[in-house]
Length: 115
Image: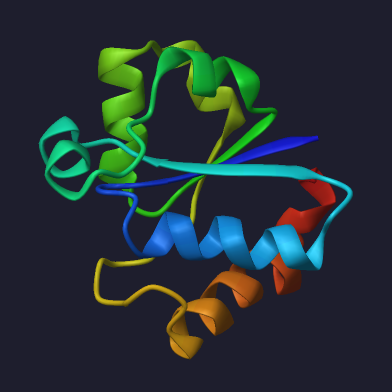
């Protein structure tokens, strides 16, 4: 199964999710990207593309606005793959509180059954 994590700039939240879950679930493929071309260019991070959206079997976005961007720029049909995690942009890369929140939302709330 191919899992894609998306946030705004692919600096902290989505990149943490990718790196953390790769170690926890080596039998799945994980990638991450950002949805802001401006910030991805500024920070040299991965920008989300239609190819990535097509690659993914499941897409976790950090905020509702990320799902809105996917719908607006790539098409509403991608929303059937999307799960909104509601994680605000207040964390740093691999911050323990972020990892705990991701684990709780994905593992404890049963979203890992989608993996």
